[in-house]
Amino acid sequence: MWDDYETKRRDKPYLWILFFLLLLGLSSIFIWRPGTGLRPVQEDPGVADKPVVTVIDEATHGRPLFSADGVTGVWVAHAQADRIVVRFLSAFGDELWAETVPVADALIASNGRYLVVGEVGQPKFYVYHARQKLVGAISAPGGLQAVSISQTGAVVAAFTVPAVDPLALRTEVALYSALGQQMWRHNLTEALPIAIRQSADGDTVAVLSLSFLQDLGGSLAVFSRHGERMFSQHLPGRPGLLALSDDGERIAVTVGNSIHVYSRQGDLILRHDAGGAVESIGSLGQTPNLVFTMLRKSLLNLRPQHHVVVLGDKGQILSEHRSSQPIVALGTRTGGSDIFIGTATSATLTTYSGEPRWSLSHVWQGEYRVSTLDGANYLVIQHDGQVVQVRGD
Image (cartoon, rainbow, N blue to C red; front, side, top):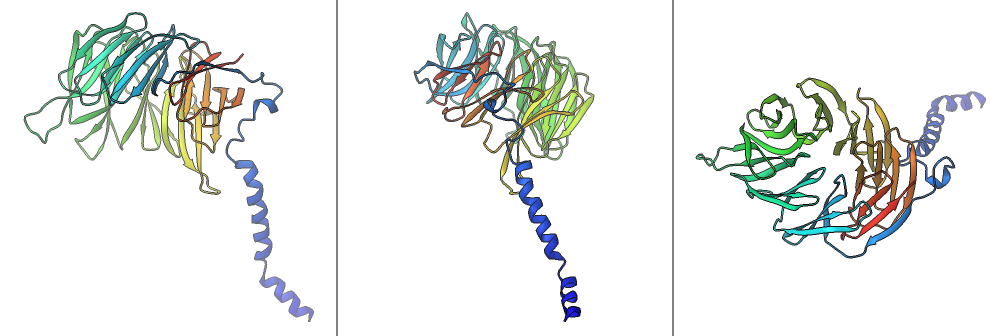
């Protein structure tokens, strides 16, 4: 009888293995669940009290398309049917002026006191100043594909122009002064521009394009303010997003799920495999650090996880915030190191190193926008255009 018992025990060792794996799986839920990287403020005695939330403007202005700091105030653009409403707000959210632009499918960019608005496929774009309002309406010789503006109001526009061969793709890029004077103009061979960025002083102009010369891939072209081509780089894959540091010394592009960072001279500084779909990318003010958002699925339950990642100058991960909810708002301040991370139900302010400053629950709806001038007062533009002030320490 005992011999038969021992034989049965030797035949079923997998029961203990299954039991051990079950315990390991249950414990990993608490270790790896999304959002555990940051604790709520009220549970951390070392973090300041929750910020004060105040509704500044209860009027509805339309769906917010754009929000950015403008040195002395905040730029906001709203979509209303077949037009765009451009507004300039004070640092506390009060409207200083507003104008309507006859634009439907909008291209919008700002830099300091200047903002440019155009429409995809149309030749005209509009330049605004924080105090002087509309500076000028400028016409390009083709349909706009991308625009950018510097702190001096110089606009770089990429556009398609009519070609003799209907199957040929002819695109160009040109620099205009704030008053509409064309400074230089170049042809982009068999490329369709999808993004343009300028440094604050306009010394560096980066153009990211889809390239059709080889297998479908991308190209990155960098020019000086005088139109001199600094370098041109073929990207082995479909390009997505483009970011440029304030000083123009670093250019970051996404190719598939990876991020490539180049110097102004064209040297590849680093390549980072994000491990998921990169949804947004930007620089943190004057620092060489990059911040990007990413979507990927959990290995445990295959549910989507949303990440906010800060990369250091050597490609090291300085911090990573995980959330089970989509990141609908991400705000950084020029010259600052804090990051505003907003979901549909909560908002968190954290340093680039991952230290939380405050966190709060809210009832803001939709994909709201957020901007700040001083890092203490944050203006949240809700889905209908209402303005909410969030004041921290």
